[in-house]
Length: 138
Length: 407
Image (cartoon, rainbow over all chains, first blue to last red; front, side):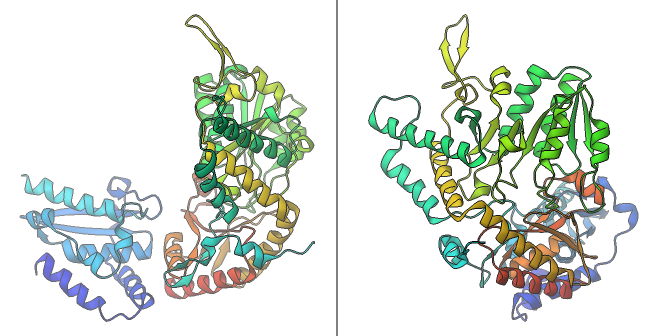
């Protein structure tokens, strides 16, 4: 699936939720279900500092594709990290670099991606694009 | 207690009628900043519509009016904290500015290699970093008084730290993270036995309890306007005349000089020596309005009301099994910090926000304190004069809901 196909699918999934509680319960669920990151990657070198919650991000290159694994110490952030991984991991570097992540706004979570939100998500997206750019430049 | 008319107080704060995420706003982030009463908001507008002008300079009518209004605030501050002289009141842009002024100017004059400065484990970064910078510059030694698991100072260790090399004790009156109310009078008396000066960070105290700088005998006291129902960008540094007179100026510029030639500049008298440049005039004037408001309600009344509220909320929250308080000192003021076992404070904060409750989450600019407790941060509810038991009930219900969702 392309990045936009996955985004559209997520938007459709989230359309079922009637209130914020249900939506956040789902995000928390996603956070709990996210494949635990290998402890060797939960290191300071891979830490994206967000002041409050912390995000760890690891990238592997598979041909022209970038595979991400990520984790956070806060469960809501982890759920959002999980959504990012769903959308971007395994995509080509070129697609990641030019990706417009419109789903966050569409599912009503824009505030979490505001640059002033101290949760590390904005920095995570930046870092993902940086990894992709590095690969694309090779 | 005299009649505390909470409804009429709440009616004075227009923002309290706001809705957040579909819920009535419950504002419990007062430690970060307080809301402003209409009189303060109106005073800001009045200043710009009626007397806007630069202070301490012009002979024209508006400048006189603005200067008079600005100086009235200085008088009100002096009365509020019982300073001996008005010229001991320096108007700053906030607590951080005041502490940095003292660390820089007191430091230049009085701190030498081998001297010691005492702070405590519960200080805000604003009362840590300026002293660290000074100690590095002057090869002085920074000593940190530890706390117990309740968040109370270890006074035995403090006593053992005191000696003739100690030149400054810098301590918070009320911990912004734990709510601990420190025994300032005792701490000052002990420091003075060794002729050490004491600076008190009163940013979390001035809006909650009556303060008498002469009774406490503190040498310096710093606080911010915006945490005491006044505007942002103005604060106060109180300093005893005997220290301020000996200290060199902080910044050079307009207003702080007596005479300038290219060969030699002589400095203005107190307090202007420490007030270089055009100040935040509007904020300074309206801080006076905020002080009037606080004084009318009465700090003794406020303290009594808030203490009851704090006790009420603490008792309700204690019923939540998964909740752990951070900061359980016997003397507390305004602040309730807690964690839900296994939940990150950020997650709790997001859910409370969805329910219209504004709290602070994170390390509260006290990272060494978080390390002391081995935690990433806390959820902090901090009270003000306009909060109610209903606010506390809503907080408790929201925390229960967060626990249900997250754990």
